[in-house]
Length: 232
Image (cartoon, rainbow, N blue to C red):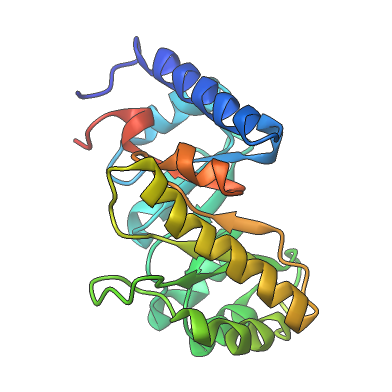
């Protein structure tokens, strides 16, 4: 279903109610979960309408498209997240324009983001992408490589390592969805315990599985279709 201004507030409210319900079932407050609206292929006016409905965190995967939207929506007090693959030839623009980066999986890219982050800006919040199922079609580091990469990225001066991110295999059963998300939560806790870190973020859960992710501790759910309908 394509989005129209008439049904966008209704869809957003329905999603927020589902987030609240999942958080309550997990014994958490809804405020502990950030809804990150993924605007890939959506028009700037659609994102502006979502902002007027109260959403403040927006994520983009493609840099040029994202920069156009940042310019078009600069009047709104929004927090922008880059959720796509971090290519080394695009790190400067990412470091200059975003507050969060969710898919860091190489020390080289992280080092470039740190070196190119403007000194007048606060440290760039980053998450390490973990490839839980070793899927060749997806980015991310293997779970066994996370502790060493986390220690190295946490030492970079212009970054703030916040947590871990994953895109697990698609599962229809909520119990199987939760199993993947539980793996990331346990890994985050192990990294904190063994590395002396204080990672507070789990970026996990998308339109088809965000309630299962919230049940397993997700702090950021990345939602596109469930908010905006099918991409144009």
